[in-house]
Image (cartoon, rainbow over all chains, first blue to last red; front, side, top):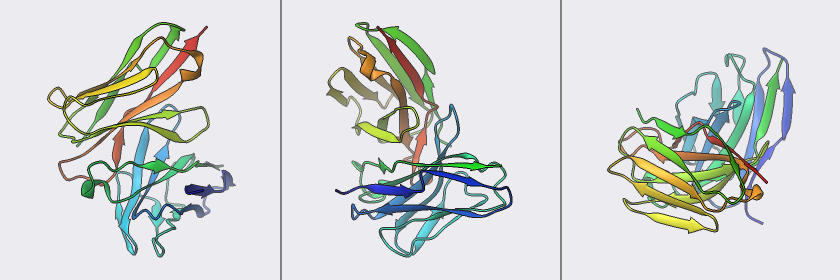
Length: 117
Length: 113
């Protein structure tokens, strides 16, 4: 089955620790995205990558870092510089970058719920 | 900067009734997305609307797009309990911003028997 997997489903960390969230897709999609969702809110874009070895900041990139060494993988690191890291993190992918394909759909993974205390 | 506003943010309705969720966006966008989210779950794609006047229907849900008014609607016909969820609209910034979607805050829909 093709899809997007995120692990772990739940993650607990102490304040001051960096943590890396995994995102893998086997859809052969070029573009991948990370969003953050806070309770009662919509999603906000953290980082995105249109191709391997390239990524761009989204609207709320401060305190986060990413890498895109393989087409299938786009891990997100939440650093200690992120002031309010507790949130639901969603990874998404699309066949091409959205600007390059008008009909492009974004497909979302199951999410990782991060709690930092 | 693209902004997306949904209303209402919370809606409680009875089974069998019709209702509409509204999604306004602030700047040029050439497409509009609707998603459904169940509690604690990820987002499920419902519709992608690509042009002015576009209308798509799936079961009891129908979405439309008016790019001139910068307005999309999600209409629910004869609501059933299974449609209870949070519905998000999202727009794409055609004006050159980041290559991701800008989401509304969501409409939390409860359908009561």
